[in-house]
Length: 279
Image (cartoon, rainbow, N blue to C red; front, top):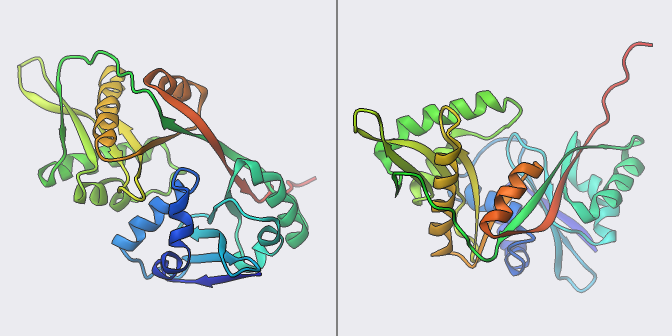
């Protein structure tokens, strides 16, 4: 029983791709990140990928550390957790399945001497019975290359509102544009000119699964944000068996439930405890 590690995401997919694809909902975070990194390889020195083989030689766990991000883990057997931090190296945070958070925290403490704190918790929702609301005036369409400048401007607005989010423009804008993964909602302005007023993105299709992501409506237009998200859901349902979305708040979760999403699992970010201040 052992961890193997690599600095090329293709090695992870060669060794653990089948394991990850067998449970695409449970492994959505690793699958979507790996698909992106495979399509847009990085030479960054801080990327790291690992997979755990049990006594029978089968892969039963994995982790992925994308450049500039904390590592994220699949659900892991106890033996893999016990040796996890030798494989990860120096990290100050790690994303885990909610059901494994306590076990990973104990392994962190055994390896490092301190106990991590829960920095954030998000819930994964899966679309079940889709019940879209009546949309406001307007229409949905797929974004294309001509929309890139507008989408980049909206991306920078999103990042300004969420300064701790490490997402890059290539992940939120350029890669989804390449595979038709951004839906726009268009509506007429007071002069009757039809313009994009909201966007919603989605990941690449992997193992029958897509995950919806960035939603933005400049000026806080909730009706347009809801309309473009519903349109993105409808588009995703046409190509995927599993349509997923993460929610970090009860308000967002309630909106997703109203559309027909059901909570599936939690993801937790564990991080180093804050440094003690002066006495």
